[in-house]
Image (cartoon, helix red, strand yellow):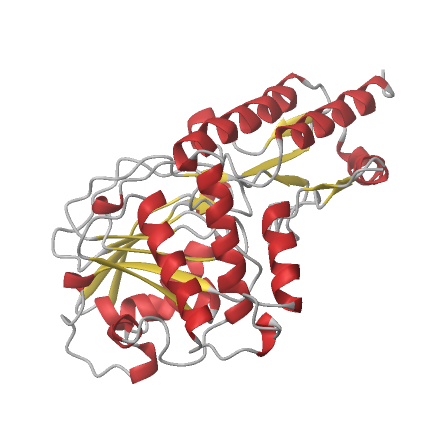
Length: 357
């Protein structure tokens, strides 16, 4: 029986990425050595980093004046590194979920934080709008996709101050205008690579403007100047990321991937809205995530939650149980998930509904 991987992260990766990484674990670049045991400063691995950076810039159309670096520590470390490097007096944040809340908590250690909008009052089931960003803010931080509650900011915002975005779970899933941002970061374990590497895209001119002393390891400029080699980088995840970038380019790039992602999300939301047993947790279509489709049992059918989870799992639907803090179900539709997996989940939902009539 085919397994359909809907895990939210670490999550599905292209077969191309998995197969090439397995091969490199046995013999990397014809060296006769495993990828796990070669020097990160070897010419073969330096070439991997250089190519990964080049493909980042090509696929996202990153303008001149930006750097791309690969770090450890996950996006969670960036919750501190961003304000450490950018927050001089005051920053503005939009609170759209658990990860945004954690970023806000860390930023408050470095200066004044203005939370200009929040959807917490309704369990983060909408994207706030109509807020004002203080003109004197050093930057405005957003989390573009909410993996737990299933909302997504699907446009590049115009806010009048430098824009910073955590794009951990929707990078490369849709076309973005990088020039609208001064910094974009994310953990790679959603749309890019296995867990262990973090990408950061930085507009170089934004750095060096804070008054505080920053430890060497936590300065973006350190890693830019050393081209991600200040310390030993996460070698295997970076290699895997390169394979995913190659796969993405061969598949037509980000614009083509966005079309597929819209098709996948539209099909699943249409079934959720049609099916009498389920309802989406995000009521407004304009706020719904394309990457993490969250839904629960409809009113009056709540007692069927475990039964449906078991029913779906028995039919090869893996990882659809919702986050422990949200409950219900969550189907993650990252780039590597084929449309056929969405069709399979829709069929299971319809079959389950037919057993209850």
